[in-house]
Image (cartoon, rainbow, N blue to C red; front, top):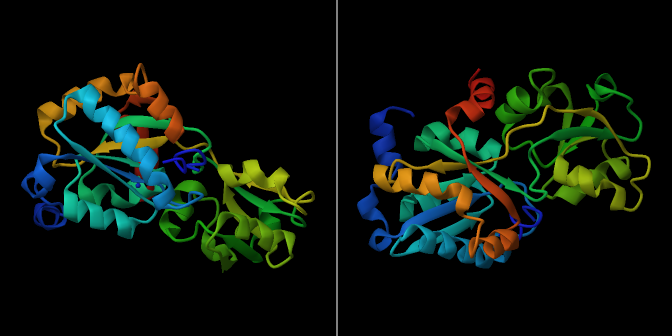
Length: 277
C-alpha cells in the first residue's frame, strides 16, 4: 500500500445481492478479508501489496482474528474478482469507487481513512491558455479520470459541467494527462489533488494553472460487506481509532495512513445523494 499508500502512492434487490456477494462460508477458512480499492493511484497493486499485508496482519492481531487476508486493487474488475473468491468482510475505497459499488455490494460505511496524498478528494481543471471554465468548454480535455462519467458529472463537477461539454482526450497515466496540456495536445485537463501537487515539479508546466476546482470530497471510505458478522463488525468499528496506535503506528505509516476514525452513512450522504441523482 505504499501507493495508498504513499501516493496512494473503492442493490439491486435481494436476489441480485445474493448472487453478487458470496456468503461468509465461501471465504478461505473463515479468514477476515480486507479489500483496498484505490483507483487512479500511482504505482501498481503488486508494489502496494506487501505493505497492505503488514497492515492487515496488525489489524488481525489487534482484533483477535485467527487469520486475515488483504488485497490491494486498482480497478473495479480486480476488486470484483477478490469479492467473488474471498468474500471480504471490509474494504477501503476511494470515494468514486465506493459510490460505484455501494449498491452492488450493499456496502455499509463504518469509518473514514485519511491518507497522505491519496488523491481524489479534490479535482482541478488546468490549462495554459484558458482563463476559466468557459474557456475550456467545447475544447479538448485530457483526463485519466473519465472512466466513471457519472461520478465526474454529478459529484466532482457538482452539476456545473459534464464531460460531454468537452472533446475528451482519454489518458491512462497521471503524468500523461498533464503532459497533454504541456505539449498543446489538449487545451485543458481534469486532474486530482495528487496530480496537482506534483504540477510544479514537472518540466515545462510553469505556465499551467488551475482554472477551476471542485468542492473537497470526504476521505476514503472504510466499509463493511454483508459477510461481516454483526458482532465482529461492531468490535472492529469500535477499534478503528486505535488501529494506528501502538504497534499499528508503524504499519499505518508504511502504508501512508494518517488516521482512521469511526464514520457512518451521514458522513457520505451528500456525495451518495449527488451520485444517485
